[in-house]
Every structure is written in structure tokens, then in C-alpha cells.
Image (cartoon, rainbow, N blue to C red):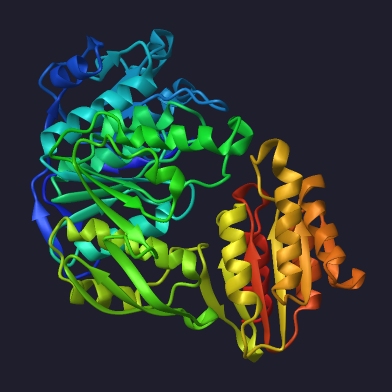
Length: 495
């Protein structure tokens, strides 16, 4: 049974930079069971104290012989239910909080190592903190409402032109995903670039306490996860936890254009680099040319040099992400010409604005990984008035966790979709996204140009019949609406 992810950093592991030619053999950090037991404040119930940890997994399906299996309790699962499976697959050790899971899993005469802890999630975090401290790796931690992943990927790409870099995969950015990512520091990379996610106050504080970042990055504040906060100021206060525990040697990269960010950084004890479109920003752009599907061109000025900024990433929101990444990479003395070279060929992560060119001139912008009002507005403006396509179709999934203002936020986006020049809108979800559909019609779209669907499967059928030669299709929605189903259908129909 799977939970999340396995971390294997074995002796002689290959540590990859962004480029395939940046591959280095690096001996892995060794952790013994006695050290593990101390780190997690646990009891070594069975087994020897000098067994070396070879790999750690919270996913029994991915156990490799010699791994330790850590039985996480989640909202919808309990890893203790899969201890037997882990042992059958050759787990050398178990970290559990439920002793009753152990006897049935321990074969007669086995030298299986068992460490009992109060809470296995806390134990995972403690192990990650120990690895982080011993690694000597410089850690970059990125938070913000919008653009964390693209900023992370770009920053890692820039820094990897000079250093060995690891970064957390996908959105492994919460109280379980971040510790799993930090276990990769057993390979002792030069730099780790990670993102910190949250939907409640106190989460960023906890993640910062685990990661102990040398460089902290705050991209912006927007109405994301607002169902869990009383106001946008409360969201900003929660994001500001990224500043806590910093020392004079730490560095902050912050958005000069976001007043909610700038109002909270005055007392940061370390040095600060700002980025944005403002003339006062340390890393700034001018003469921005948003060419829709053809990306963005601009001039960039930084304390480390200036140059022509060219990116295939869509929209001015991604300009801000690139500026943040440049601000990060400057802390590692990456030359500007190297960053601009990487930026010019950088492709977005899957589902985050990838441009897919299909047959008969059909083009899909796959932004199906997630959605929020700020990012959706940016995509609508950038793509709605683009030239070179016969029609523009927007497939828009419901934006989740927006709280009491959800319908009004959807309504504003619906107005903008119509005003930006989209010819057809297909919505996916419930009552809140129906407000988007209503607003689009109120703003001038004909009733037969707006279709509402309860599910992405239904939307895929409709869009499959709707799309014609030379159409542009934007697909964007929160993960819970699964709008990637629409993208997959279009790829199959127009291969």
C-alpha cells in the first residue's frame, strides 16, 4: 500500500543537477539505529544499535530490501496496517508508534530493528532535521500564495549551472512532504531548493523549524486557502512565519511590488534582495512585452548585471517568478548570462502552463495542476487577446478553499474571461464556479457559448466535440476538479 514516497540515498548515489552532465558520485551520510532512536526520542525495542539506515520509506509498496519503514498515520490511512507488507518485502527496520503492529510482522529468529516512538510524523520531521543539520547543505525555502513551484524549478535550474542541487519533487511541501524531501540531503548536495506550503496558521513556522533555511523567499500574498483565514492580512501573517528564527547570516528574497509582504519584512535580521516591476526593486524589469503563447521579453537589471530577458513562460506572473529566481541565484554568484541562457529555454513543470501543440493547429495550454483567482486572471489576460488562433476556449475548474468570498471571486474571473476575448467557456464544478459562468454571460458572452459541467469527465466529452481546427484551449482548475482529464482527452483526440 502506498502512502507517499520513498527516499533512497545510498553510498555512491548519483546526484543530478538540472543539466544531465552535472552528475557527481557522492558518498551518502550514514545514520545508525542508535542515532535514529535518539533523534526521534524513541525506544529501540528490538535489533542492534549499530545498524546503518540505507533508505527510509513511508510507502510499503516501494520498500527496497534493507530500507526502514516508517508507519505514518494520516487522515485516511494508517501505515501500521501495512507493516506486514513492508517486512515481507525486506524492510530491515520499522519505526512505529503502535507496538501491537510489531509481533505479527516479526518472523521467528528475525533481527528486524524496531524503534517505537510517540508519533511517527514527528519522528519523520526529527530525522529530516537531523539530516539537514549534518548535511552542510545550504537550503533555500520558498513560500508565497502563487508561483512557488515555478520559482523553485527556475532557481534550481539557475543554481545547478554551478552547484549540485536537489529540490522537492512536485508539491511535496507540507509537514510530511518537506521532511521526505530533506532526507535527500543525505547525499550532501551543495544546495537544496524547497517550497513551503500551508493552509493554516503555524504550518510555515513548523516547516521553517525543520528546514532551517539559509535563504528565505516570499513571492507574494493572494486569496488562496482563504477558507481557513479571516482576511488576507491573516494570510500574510501566516506567510510571514517564513521570517521567524532567522539570524544575521540569513538572506531574504522578497516581492517589492506586494505591500503585504513589504509591510512585514522591516525587522528581518539578515540581508534582503527585493524583486519586481518597481523601480525600487533590486532585481527589476522594464520594457515588458507579453506575447501570449510566444512568452515574454523584457530588460532585466540586477546588482549582478543586466541583460535581455526572454522566457517562453506565459504571462507577467511568470516574469515575477523568474525575477524571484534570479534574486535567489544571485546569492550563489550565478552569472547573469548563465541565468538568462537557462531562462530562454526553460519549460514549465507539467500542468503549470505547458503549451501543447496538437494536430490541425489546435493548441492546449495545460495549467490544470492548480488554480486561484490571481493566477487565473493572469492567464486570462495573457491568452485571451492572443492572435494566430481562430477561437479561444477556456475550460475553468472550480477554485477550491476560497471560503465566504468564493462566489464573488469566481464572478470577477468570469467577467474577465469574457472581457479578455474568450469565445467559449466551459466550467467544471459546483455552485461557486457557476457564478463564473453567470458573470461571463452578464459580460456579453452568448448563453450557448457558456457551458457548465459537474465533472471533468463530462467537460472532456463536451470540449472534445466543441474544439475545432486552429483553436486555442486554456485548461485551468484546482487539483480537486481534475481538469487534467480534459487535457488528456484533447491530446488523445488531436494527436
